[in-house]
Amino acid sequence: MNRILIALALVLSAAVAVPAVAHQGKSKGNRPDVIALPNGFQPEGIATGRGSSFYVGSIPTGDIYKGSLRTGEGDVFIDAPAGRSATGIKVDRRNRLFVSGARTGQAYVYDARTGAERATYQLTTQPSFINDVVVTRRAAYFTDSVNQRLYVLDLGKRGALPANARTLPLTGDLVYDADPNTFELNGITATRNGKRLIAVQSRTGQLFSIDPATGATKQIALVGTQKLEFGDGLLLEGKKLYVVRNQANRVATLRLSRDGSTATLVREVTRPEFAVPTTIARHGSRLYVVNAKFGSSAPETPYEVVKVPR
Image 1 (spheres, rainbow, N blue to C red):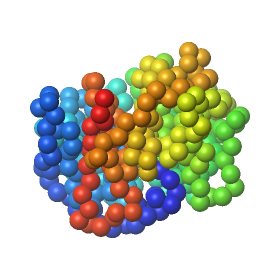
Image 2 (image 1 turned 180 degrees about the vertical axis):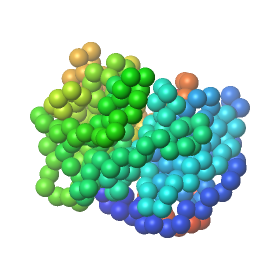
Image 3 (image 1 turned 90 degrees about the vertical axis):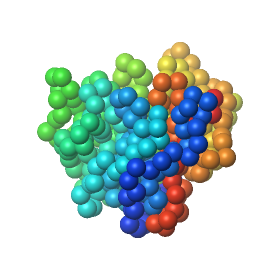
Image 4 (image 1 turned 45 degrees about the vertical axis):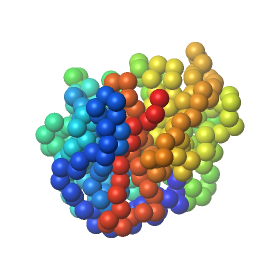
């Protein structure tokens, strides 16, 4: 998310919980292409889970909405305590929901089946913006768009959650500026084996690979474009890297080189229903984004999950 837009989105207007929200039209496979979320929800992160379930977090309240990609129906699943926020979210292989806490400096872990809280972590007490998260077999990694570091939850035997998070300073090619009002690292993803992380820097529109063991970063050379302006959520599938460009209302597909040093733009797609999409998730062969509509924080503002065209 970009700093100016997120400042607008973080106006703490009341989110109106509308139960059993229905879909807005069907695709050829009899699944909705556009799924309505509660009016006023102010979403940012999206993740898919078991079955046809999906989860979307609310920026101003930290609430989590759970719905069905098959039917388009859903309801508020987690009514978060006051003072929480939700931006990037992921569901891990143990059916746990990891949630980034934006300006709270916190991260949360919930049971994706029951909604029960598993853990809360105070990642930092400094001014920060905990933006996105990726979960590998070994750890969960959270980006901070204000401070040049990742926060890491090292997973133990059978995925056991740690007592505390640790901080991983980022070195190498990535450089944050001195202005706390700019947005730096944003979306993050990982290779299948978890040995390399990839993140986008919103201020520069550049991609970086990150060594999860050392925090060393290397800029990924872009081919076919100079920068990924408005880069937000990421999704890596094999050598295909999907980058959501929020204000551009586009999803870019790039092909990573074998060594991960270059990323070639393959195509960009959009659809009329995109309205500042922020993050992306896969379910089967389908991709979905969530419309954040930054700046539209009125209680009556509608929000949606939208299928990405092939």
